[in-house]
Image 1 (cartoon, rainbow, N blue to C red):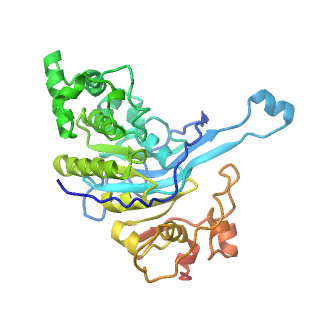
Image 2: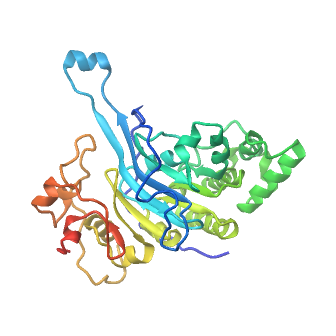
Image 3: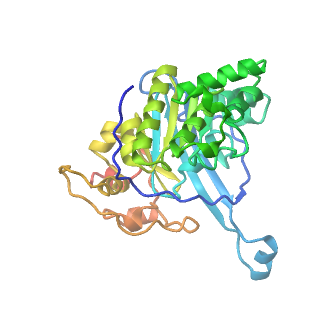
Length: 373
């Protein structure tokens, strides 16, 4: 088994994202630009393609209060026009400060939320349209999620056998109780637990062991795509390394594709192939792991990396993290990062930058586009 050493220093810490009432979901055709059938950099069609994904929550006060107090509706744009693709067997990591929309993207991809705008395709199929039909059951077998909190994501009243075996029974992947026990035992062994653990309850395990149970449950349907929503953030550093080693080994063995969400840049550096940086619901930079950590282009990406103490000089001036994240209910005009950016000019304050490909990196920054940085 390969060994991953995780840096204890991490980036900004996450906080729970508001989950207000659902916004109206638009019925849209398949995405274009990065559409189904468009080949990626390696010449193959990406397994996962998201185009212009958006999710808006209505966080207004009740209707009667709005009428009496003459207050307008308040809409929170948690995700606003996110596009990316992931090739089979690869890992895309999403990073950013708390409240930037990472977890909302995860829930959109597994069908827990329906998008307000845009969509995503899985293996050439419109996933959100399929989730509403009989095909959705087959698709959910191929897409699974590992949740952030191993203490809250497991039913404390169920034994491990019931937790891991539920997807097998739900999707009719086993025919009798003996086959169920055998399959649950195999899944537990694949994540470094003993088959004898299936008779225990979640409270009898440590945090790292609980997360292994969550991984075993996600693997039960033999998925191709795993959405990992900060799977190691609730664990200490040594246990993080164990869980990450298991995930990397499973990816090599089964050819799994990951969307890995994290606030810990040290973890991201070890597990990812591509990295997407999010800020206030939008992607501001997408690049290969080596390129992003060696030569970050967007000022926000530079600030995140400069916030991590380093033993050696990076060769460029460090920019300390400045200011606070703006109120997402009232974001700044133009580039959302302009109040905190040392390179902002008048154009940045009035015109929102598009995510453009510049020198092999997708970046949304007027200063980079104009060659000022």
